[in-house]
Length: 104
Image (cartoon, helix red, strand yellow):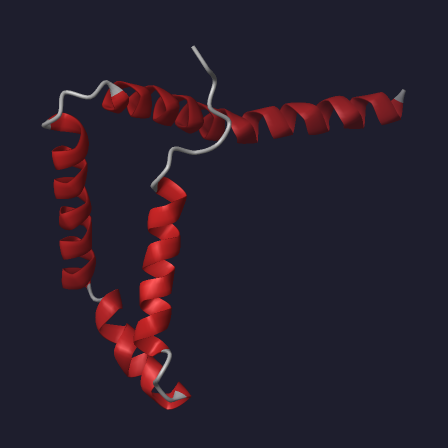
């Protein structure tokens, strides 16, 4: 079994593709036209539709194909979440340890 140190093909590519698509949309616009173009993208309805499209795509790509990847996504997500939750406590602990070492 080979360990992947590079993200799966598609994750970074999809972000780059979305950025290219956005750039192509605003490339010919004047600077004063860009806020009017971006403003609808920040609406609650637009965001809800984008999340729904993402969930539909995820379901089609992983759930319908019986891929084991969702299990890994949950495991990795859980590890990242637990690290982020514990991080403030660990930083306080380290700061206390450093403060205590400077006093002695």
